Length: 245
Image (cartoon, rainbow, N blue to C red; front, top):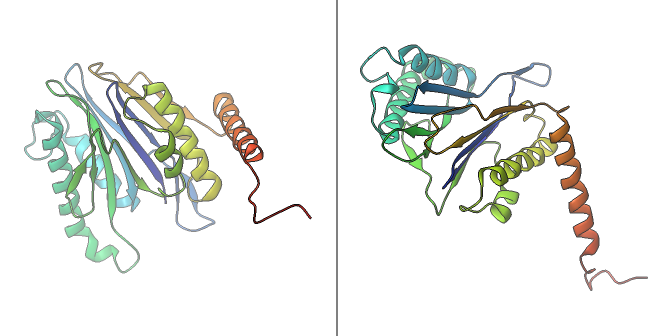
Protein backbone atom coordinates (compact mmCIF):
# COMPACT_ATOMS: atom_id res chain seq x y z
CA UNK A 1 0.00 0.00 0.00
CA UNK A 2 1.03 3.61 -0.32
CA UNK A 3 -0.35 7.12 0.05
CA UNK A 4 0.04 9.87 -2.53
CA UNK A 5 -1.53 13.31 -2.48
CA UNK A 6 -1.79 16.10 -5.03
CA UNK A 7 -3.11 19.59 -4.26
CA UNK A 8 -3.97 22.21 -6.91
CA UNK A 9 -3.79 25.85 -5.81
CA UNK A 10 -3.72 29.29 -7.47
CA UNK A 11 -0.02 29.53 -6.48
CA UNK A 12 0.85 26.13 -7.95
CA UNK A 13 0.95 22.53 -6.77
CA UNK A 14 1.79 20.57 -3.64
CA UNK A 15 2.64 16.91 -4.28
CA UNK A 16 3.51 14.35 -1.62
CA UNK A 17 4.13 10.62 -1.45
CA UNK A 18 5.34 8.10 1.07
CA UNK A 19 8.14 5.59 0.34
CA UNK A 20 7.00 2.27 1.77
CA UNK A 21 6.38 -0.82 -0.30
CA UNK A 22 5.82 -4.29 1.05
CA UNK A 23 5.07 -7.83 -0.03
CA UNK A 24 4.20 -9.06 3.45
CA UNK A 25 5.10 -8.05 6.97
CA UNK A 26 8.65 -9.35 6.62
CA UNK A 27 9.37 -7.86 3.17
CA UNK A 28 9.31 -4.10 3.63
CA UNK A 29 11.36 -1.78 1.44
CA UNK A 30 11.71 1.92 0.66
CA UNK A 31 10.95 3.04 -2.88
CA UNK A 32 10.56 6.58 -4.19
CA UNK A 33 7.07 7.03 -5.65
CA UNK A 34 7.41 10.63 -6.85
CA UNK A 35 9.07 10.80 -10.27
CA UNK A 36 9.82 14.02 -12.15
CA UNK A 37 10.53 14.78 -15.80
CA UNK A 38 11.79 18.27 -16.68
CA UNK A 39 12.28 20.09 -19.97
CA UNK A 40 14.12 23.30 -18.95
CA UNK A 41 11.93 26.41 -19.10
CA UNK A 42 9.18 24.48 -20.92
CA UNK A 43 7.73 21.69 -18.81
CA UNK A 44 7.73 20.08 -15.38
CA UNK A 45 5.84 16.79 -15.19
CA UNK A 46 5.46 14.73 -12.00
CA UNK A 47 4.09 11.22 -11.59
CA UNK A 48 3.06 9.79 -8.20
CA UNK A 49 2.32 6.07 -8.24
CA UNK A 50 0.36 3.51 -6.25
CA UNK A 51 -0.48 -0.14 -6.82
CA UNK A 52 1.59 -2.92 -8.33
CA UNK A 53 5.19 -1.74 -8.20
CA UNK A 54 6.29 -3.64 -11.31
CA UNK A 55 3.46 -2.09 -13.33
CA UNK A 56 4.07 1.48 -12.18
CA UNK A 57 7.84 1.23 -12.53
CA UNK A 58 7.46 -0.08 -16.09
CA UNK A 59 5.29 2.90 -17.00
CA UNK A 60 7.65 5.42 -15.40
CA UNK A 61 10.84 3.91 -16.81
CA UNK A 62 9.33 3.75 -20.30
CA UNK A 63 8.36 7.42 -20.11
CA UNK A 64 11.74 8.50 -18.75
CA UNK A 65 13.59 6.63 -21.50
CA UNK A 66 11.39 8.20 -24.17
CA UNK A 67 11.57 11.77 -22.79
CA UNK A 68 13.27 14.07 -25.28
CA UNK A 69 13.75 11.37 -27.92
CA UNK A 70 10.88 12.48 -30.14
CA UNK A 71 9.32 9.02 -29.95
CA UNK A 72 5.65 9.34 -30.99
CA UNK A 73 3.08 8.40 -28.32
CA UNK A 74 5.76 8.13 -25.59
CA UNK A 75 7.76 11.37 -25.45
CA UNK A 76 5.85 13.57 -23.02
CA UNK A 77 7.84 16.62 -24.07
CA UNK A 78 6.20 16.54 -27.51
CA UNK A 79 2.89 17.61 -25.98
CA UNK A 80 1.60 21.16 -25.60
CA UNK A 81 -0.90 20.43 -22.82
CA UNK A 82 -1.06 18.34 -19.67
CA UNK A 83 -4.32 16.86 -20.96
CA UNK A 84 -2.37 15.30 -23.82
CA UNK A 85 0.23 14.06 -21.33
CA UNK A 86 -2.53 12.41 -19.29
CA UNK A 87 -3.80 10.65 -22.42
CA UNK A 88 -0.30 9.35 -23.18
CA UNK A 89 0.21 8.07 -19.63
CA UNK A 90 -3.23 6.42 -19.61
CA UNK A 91 -2.68 4.77 -22.98
CA UNK A 92 0.72 3.42 -21.93
CA UNK A 93 -0.66 2.09 -18.64
CA UNK A 94 -3.49 0.36 -20.50
CA UNK A 95 -1.10 -1.29 -22.98
CA UNK A 96 1.23 -2.52 -20.22
CA UNK A 97 -1.67 -4.01 -18.28
CA UNK A 98 -3.03 -5.67 -21.42
CA UNK A 99 0.41 -7.21 -22.03
CA UNK A 100 1.42 -8.18 -18.49
CA UNK A 101 -1.87 -8.35 -16.58
CA UNK A 102 -2.94 -11.89 -17.53
CA UNK A 103 0.39 -13.28 -16.30
CA UNK A 104 0.42 -11.29 -13.05
CA UNK A 105 -3.19 -11.99 -12.06
CA UNK A 106 -2.31 -15.54 -11.03
CA UNK A 107 -0.12 -14.10 -8.27
CA UNK A 108 -1.76 -10.78 -7.35
CA UNK A 109 -3.33 -7.56 -8.52
CA UNK A 110 -1.44 -6.10 -11.51
CA UNK A 111 -3.18 -2.71 -11.44
CA UNK A 112 -1.56 0.64 -10.82
CA UNK A 113 -2.78 4.22 -10.55
CA UNK A 114 -1.09 7.59 -10.90
CA UNK A 115 -1.40 11.18 -9.89
CA UNK A 116 -0.09 13.23 -12.79
CA UNK A 117 0.71 16.88 -12.21
CA UNK A 118 2.78 19.67 -13.64
CA UNK A 119 2.87 22.57 -16.03
CA UNK A 120 3.63 23.01 -19.70
CA UNK A 121 4.43 26.54 -20.86
CA UNK A 122 1.33 28.22 -22.24
CA UNK A 123 -1.12 26.82 -19.70
CA UNK A 124 -1.50 26.83 -15.88
CA UNK A 125 -0.47 23.94 -13.63
CA UNK A 126 -2.85 20.99 -13.79
CA UNK A 127 -3.48 17.84 -11.75
CA UNK A 128 -4.96 14.51 -12.88
CA UNK A 129 -5.71 11.07 -11.47
CA UNK A 130 -5.04 8.26 -13.96
CA UNK A 131 -6.87 4.99 -13.34
CA UNK A 132 -5.82 1.46 -14.27
CA UNK A 133 -8.27 1.49 -17.18
CA UNK A 134 -6.26 4.33 -18.69
CA UNK A 135 -8.96 6.96 -18.21
CA UNK A 136 -8.52 9.94 -15.89
CA UNK A 137 -10.13 12.85 -14.05
CA UNK A 138 -8.80 16.36 -13.50
CA UNK A 139 -8.71 18.43 -10.33
CA UNK A 140 -10.64 21.71 -10.35
CA UNK A 141 -11.04 24.65 -7.95
CA UNK A 142 -14.11 22.88 -6.52
CA UNK A 143 -12.31 19.54 -6.18
CA UNK A 144 -8.75 20.71 -5.80
CA UNK A 145 -7.01 17.74 -4.22
CA UNK A 146 -6.66 14.13 -5.34
CA UNK A 147 -5.45 11.04 -3.44
CA UNK A 148 -4.43 7.51 -4.35
CA UNK A 149 -3.51 4.50 -2.23
CA UNK A 150 -4.43 4.50 1.47
CA UNK A 151 -6.55 7.65 1.41
CA UNK A 152 -9.09 7.43 4.22
CA UNK A 153 -6.98 8.34 7.25
CA UNK A 154 -5.47 11.49 5.75
CA UNK A 155 -8.68 12.80 4.20
CA UNK A 156 -10.53 14.28 7.23
CA UNK A 157 -7.92 16.96 7.97
CA UNK A 158 -7.90 18.00 4.30
CA UNK A 159 -11.69 18.21 4.16
CA UNK A 160 -11.78 20.38 7.29
CA UNK A 161 -8.80 22.67 6.82
CA UNK A 162 -7.66 22.80 3.18
CA UNK A 163 -9.04 25.53 0.93
CA UNK A 164 -8.36 26.35 -2.70
CA UNK A 165 -7.07 29.83 -1.80
CA UNK A 166 -4.47 28.45 0.64
CA UNK A 167 -0.81 29.25 0.20
CA UNK A 168 1.61 26.55 -0.89
CA UNK A 169 3.19 26.64 2.58
CA UNK A 170 -0.13 26.03 4.37
CA UNK A 171 -1.08 23.27 1.94
CA UNK A 172 2.30 21.58 2.42
CA UNK A 173 1.83 21.74 6.20
CA UNK A 174 -1.60 20.13 5.91
CA UNK A 175 -0.19 17.50 3.56
CA UNK A 176 2.37 16.47 6.17
CA UNK A 177 -0.32 16.34 8.89
CA UNK A 178 -2.40 14.17 6.53
CA UNK A 179 0.56 11.81 6.13
CA UNK A 180 1.18 11.68 9.87
CA UNK A 181 -2.45 10.65 10.45
CA UNK A 182 -2.13 7.93 7.81
CA UNK A 183 1.18 6.59 9.11
CA UNK A 184 -0.22 6.41 12.65
CA UNK A 185 -3.18 4.29 11.50
CA UNK A 186 -1.70 2.11 8.76
CA UNK A 187 1.61 0.27 8.88
CA UNK A 188 1.73 -0.06 5.10
CA UNK A 189 2.43 3.68 4.76
CA UNK A 190 5.75 5.04 5.96
CA UNK A 191 8.44 7.69 5.71
CA UNK A 192 10.45 9.14 4.09
CA UNK A 193 7.84 11.49 2.67
CA UNK A 194 8.74 13.32 -0.54
CA UNK A 195 7.08 16.74 -0.86
CA UNK A 196 7.28 19.04 -3.88
CA UNK A 197 6.00 22.62 -3.71
CA UNK A 198 5.80 23.82 -7.29
CA UNK A 199 5.29 27.55 -7.94
CA UNK A 200 3.31 28.49 -11.04
CA UNK A 201 5.55 29.44 -14.00
CA UNK A 202 8.75 28.61 -12.10
CA UNK A 203 9.49 25.48 -14.15
CA UNK A 204 11.69 24.45 -11.24
CA UNK A 205 11.68 21.60 -8.74
CA UNK A 206 14.10 23.25 -6.32
CA UNK A 207 11.44 23.08 -3.58
CA UNK A 208 11.58 19.29 -3.32
CA UNK A 209 12.04 18.03 0.23
CA UNK A 210 12.38 14.61 1.84
CA UNK A 211 11.10 14.21 5.40
CA UNK A 212 12.39 11.28 7.42
CA UNK A 213 10.85 10.23 10.74
CA UNK A 214 13.81 11.88 12.48
CA UNK A 215 13.43 15.22 10.67
CA UNK A 216 13.25 17.97 13.35
CA UNK A 217 10.49 19.92 11.60
CA UNK A 218 8.37 16.81 11.00
CA UNK A 219 8.82 15.68 14.61
CA UNK A 220 7.79 19.11 15.91
CA UNK A 221 4.80 19.26 13.57
CA UNK A 222 3.53 15.85 14.67
CA UNK A 223 3.91 16.70 18.36
CA UNK A 224 2.21 20.09 18.05
CA UNK A 225 -0.68 18.58 16.09
CA UNK A 226 -1.14 15.79 18.63
CA UNK A 227 -1.01 18.23 21.54
CA UNK A 228 -3.47 20.51 19.75
CA UNK A 229 -5.98 17.70 19.30
CA UNK A 230 -5.72 16.77 22.98
CA UNK A 231 -6.22 20.38 24.03
CA UNK A 232 -9.21 20.79 21.73
CA UNK A 233 -10.87 17.61 23.02
CA UNK A 234 -10.25 18.69 26.62
CA UNK A 235 -11.91 22.06 25.91
CA UNK A 236 -15.05 20.55 24.39
CA UNK A 237 -18.16 20.33 26.63
CA UNK A 238 -18.96 16.91 28.04
CA UNK A 239 -22.01 15.15 26.56
CA UNK A 240 -25.11 14.98 28.73
CA UNK A 241 -25.20 11.20 28.15
CA UNK A 242 -22.18 10.84 30.44
CA UNK A 243 -22.94 12.79 33.63
CA UNK A 244 -20.58 12.82 36.56
CA UNK A 245 -21.27 9.99 39.09
